[in-house]
Amino acid sequence: MLYDIVIIGSGLAGATSAHILAENGFKVLVVEKERNIGGQCFDYKDSNNITIHKYGPHIFHTKEKRVWDFVTRFSEFNLFQHSVLSYAEGNFIEFPINRITINKIFGLELSCNEIEGFLKEEVKKSKFNTPHLSFRDAIVSQVGEKLYSLFFENYTKKQWNTDPENLSPELAFRIPIRTNNDSRYFTDMYQGIPKDGYTKMMSNMLDHPNIQILLGCDYFSKKDEIESKLTIYTGELDRFFDYKFGELEYRSVRIELKTYDTKQFQPAPVVNYPNDYDWTRTTEFKQLTGEVSDKTTICYEYPLAQGHAFYTVPTKENNEKRLKYMQEVAQLEASGKFLFIGRLAEYRYYNMDNVIAATLDKINNWLNNQK
Ligand code: UDP
Image (spheres, helix red, strand yellow):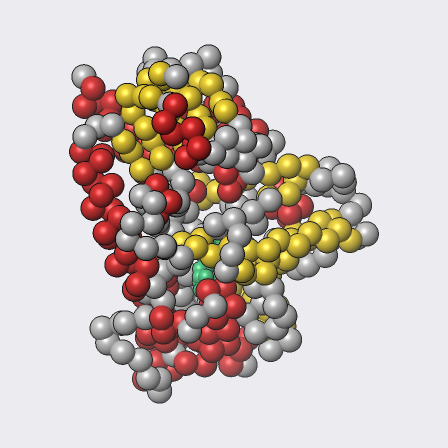
């Protein structure tokens, strides 16, 4: 079989690439190993008509207008500002850490201006490495040991099954520390959930006469039969190279869904459980989507070592291995015949908007080189 372009994977990287290339007149084949499109963004309605994110909560947020302009071509969005509470010391507390969190935990009534000085004192009492060697250092140096142990230490151990000292400091960039009253999880200008779900949004991206989709097909078993001018790979990086530099670690999650006979189950769309229970967090999907029902479905996340790859694991060993693979990627990409895009193929802890931005950049660059 000869195609202009073959794309392995129909997640955000695959669907975005497919759409842009199809629009530019290329005949595209998308090969997807699952029986549905959507990758980790796949969602569906349960028997109570509540939208379930199969691979855990997905909240779209971006600072980039070009990314927002792109996704809103394929779906309307419920505009929604995400909020999270953390269950600590028996109470639901505002998270990420901000003025309200600090006043509640320490029983104080500090103003925004006083919070900075308070945190400085907390940090002064604490031990950490400078420059930062780990996730622990990066957090303790901002909030001190007490807040670190209450909100971060055990959540991180549960999530990654390793001591936070083994995780790279960059992981801390995901979680802001604030001195004001802003309790939103994200402060990006554009934020929301696709009105009819991510699967529908992505099926709209893939709905083009130049795009053919092969579901339930493992690319590696068909590799020799498919020829193309360009191959776009969005699967696991080490798998593509037959693990020649060793296996990269991925982290999975067991999702448990429970439906309750109540309109609202928890006080926020997502509740994090750093210190109690085996799950890391619970999500009440209705609060993300704005759906109305007498029942509600809750998602409990239990981190796992094996299974569907949800996360790349930010340790030094994995980062070093990644670099070796990425050198091979750079060579293949330089030939103009391959692109590696997305969380799994670039082995990066990308958010959804990062995946789209990276895809827009790589595909537009490839198109420019064809002129
Ligand atoms: N984290 C934490 N406590 C929390 C939330 C997050 O320690 O209450 C740490 C944890 O290591 C987690 C990382 O910050 O894996 C990133 O959190 P984020 O909410 O971005 O995770 P995601 O939504 O990607 O699962």
